[in-house]
Structure formats: structure tokens, C-alpha cells
Amino acid sequence: MAEKKIPAKRVTHKTITAPLFDLTGKEIGTVPLPVEFFAVEGPTSLLAQYVRVYRANQRQGTSSSKTRSEVVGSTRKIYKQKGTGRARHGARKAPIFVGGGVAFGPRLSDHSLSLTKKQRSKALFMSLSAKLADNGIIVIEKMSTLPAKTKSMSALLKALKLDRKVLLVHAHEGTDGAVMGARNIKNVLLREAKILNAYDALYANKIIFAREAMDEFLAFRNQKNEN
Image (cartoon, rainbow, N blue to C red):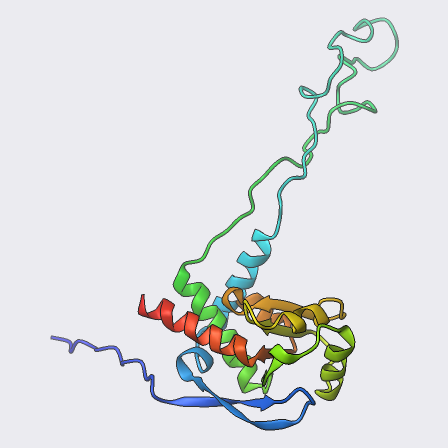
């Protein structure tokens, strides 16, 4: 009889770190991160599937054209069938006429796809793990004290030497100044910690976590795992 394999228990006591910066762009230390969120491996096909599902769900599916039966107008025969020397036609609403219906045109459709909660969570953790392994995640201390000015946020990004596809993860409360300062900056995407998704993490070249947002993200994910 084949021996039954027992799945390995998840290791929760090990940690990895992300660099911690102050508001002047100076590195002042590191932030410990749990391996169950930031050191997750899995098949790349899951990430490809996540991207396909995410993009499909962004489609509205509201494009629609009228068929000849939906166009308002008379259905009478426009001229007699024979004897005119012209092609035979019925109503003016036929697709061959200007103002008529559209043959095989777009219709209202639902393009939505779905993934399980475990698949979505694992895709997020895989994308964050890949970014961290590529030195693509940093944490900013005391971002709640940043003035609500574009100039202040631009100065911080310049000090960090970031100018392409930055994902700024902010807390639900307490980081309003950073949000106000970053929302008008090109190539900066804002996301709240609790609604961070794998597509945004994969899109960004660099992910900036406010320290408050990192604490909120970890607390939220730990709570979901317990439930």
C-alpha cells in the first residue's frame, strides 16, 4: 500500500525584509515581512490566468448595434419585384441600405470571468514575492506627515529616483496628504492596501508602501487567513 503523503505545514516564524526609507529618500533600516505573503512560489500560468480574467472583467460589453428588426421605419417593399431592371429588394431597413440595420454587428455581451478566492490571493502573493525578490518593494516611514502637495511627493519620488510606473499603496486613513500629492503625477498609480491586486503589482516597476499601509495590509491578510 502506498504511503500517504502529509502536506508540509506552513512556516510562519521566518521573515524577510524590505528596505525602509524616510521622507528625504534616505534608507534608515528594514521592515520584516512574513514569508507567507512575500515569499510565495507558484506556477506562472496562474499569473497569466489572473491577468486574462482581470482584463476581461474590465470590459463593459455595452457595444451594441441594431438589426433590421430593431430599426424604426416602414417594412413596405420599396419597389416591385420584377420589371425594373434593378436588384430585388424588400424594406429600406435591410443592412445593404444606409440607415438600415447592421448585419453581424456588436451586441450586448457579458465578458466577465472568475477565479476562486484562493487563486486571487495566491496570485497577489506571487506578484508581491516576485517584486520583492527583484528589489521592487520599498516602505516609506511617516508618510502620514507628508504635506498634501504635488511638489512634496514629486520631491520624494525624485529622491528615490523613481519616474516610471510607480504603485503607491496607501492606508484607508492617515495618508491623505500622500494621496492628494500623488494623484496628479504621471505614471503613479494609487491603491488602498485592502484592495491591492496582483494586476497592479505586476504592472508597476516599483511598489511603494506607506508604513501605515503595510501594517494595514498585513493585519487585513492575517485576519482573512484566520477566517
